[in-house]
Amino acid sequence: MVNSALTTSPSLPEQQQLWSWLHEVPDPEIPVISVVDLGIVRDVQATAVDGEVVCTVVITPTYSGCPAMAVIARDIADAFKRHGVARVEIQTRLSPAWTTDWMSDLGKRQLKSYGIAPPAQQVIDISGISRKRLLAPKVACPHCNSMNTICISQFGSTSCKSLYRCKDCLEPFDYFKAH
Image (tube, rainbow, N blue to C red; front, side, top):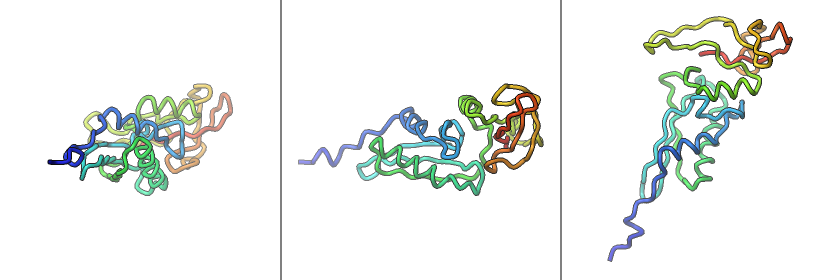
């Protein structure tokens, strides 16, 4: 007689459920935006290996030296473990390089509500081949929506942000650089 517990594959979570769990993981530097809405999660798969569920999550750092990636990988693994997945494999993919074009519209709205101006331009053209970069784009103030803003410094609180100031409400703010 064969033990049915040994021959039964574990129940794999649906793809939609996996993405839902990933939406629960906030970016450690900007906690109002999930790692999914930030656009760094490229893929997630669940497979059965040796009678247990293994989830593989592919992430792309916002830049190749991003110090938050170790924290993000740990937080993703912890989120899956809270949902009963004991084996989580995180794969880092550097190519294609992350771009702010991968941010969701919800993520951009969340940045703005947090006081960070979202990227003001698209980086990759429609063909997906050529890249364009503008220095100091016109950026709307996340506080009063004025376009009467000025770049104070290309270097903000983190390397992916610039420091701007609104000439109308006089508030300084971070701008999440398009790249």
